[in-house]
Amino acid sequence: MTIGDLLRQYRINQNKTLQEFAGNIIDRSYYGKVERNIHQISAENLINLLRYNQIDAIEFIETLDPNYENYQSQIQIQRKIMEEAYYQVDKDKLKKVKLMITESKLSEKDKEIQNLIADGLLELLNPDKPNQKIRDEIKKKIFEIPNFNSTKFMLYCNSMRFYSLADNEAIVRKIIEKYQVRESMLVKKSLLSLAINVLVLSIEENKFENIDFYIDFANKVPTNPDLFFYKSAMTFFTYFIQYKKNQDKSALQYYDAIIKSFCLVGMPEYGEDLRKFKDKYK
Image (tube, rainbow, N blue to C red; front, side, top):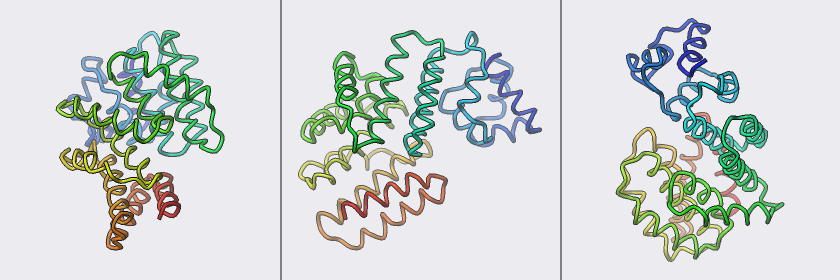
């Protein structure tokens, strides 16, 4: 069974038309060709489509015959699910992804990297019980990858807490300067994630001397639906720093509004995380 075959099966079971199933996520005509296996669908659009139609992503992937899965799409879909699980603070979902990786048809090398990414995210969700072995393995793997491809981006972005603030500032500045001209949405998301993490680490250490570069970069990135989450998070931490640096109480209303918006749009766990962060470092 192909991805298109399985999507069609879910759509028919839900008694939906092509337009109802595709919504505003993907053009109806293009989606129809995905179902007929004429066109392929990106991992990002597939995950959004499954979420829109309330289809469990892990269940969907496990239903597919591995012989028909696109190898790279499988990797990206697993990573998308990992990201969602992390932002939802869902450790059980991350553990399910690890099981999915183990049972997948990926090469042993790719399984190792995918599991390392998942372990890194789980490590971030357990800050009180650091696993130095996992942290060292991730740092070693990042060093071994010669170019900043999507794998290196994800490994580094998810393991920045394993480096000093000064090291992160230097590394991220170089990455942004080199890749900010890229039009790829994946690159833009990655760069914004790195900038957000620098701001978080700066707040935690109460050091704001070098943050203007990262805020200026984020402000220059146009906001669109794909980047809305990242721009919202960046805005939250920017206002938080404005309050911390200048004791500007007017900034409080803005970051409280952003927390509320995350809770309203279906990310209450992340909104609650921001609230706890605010209370801890305010």
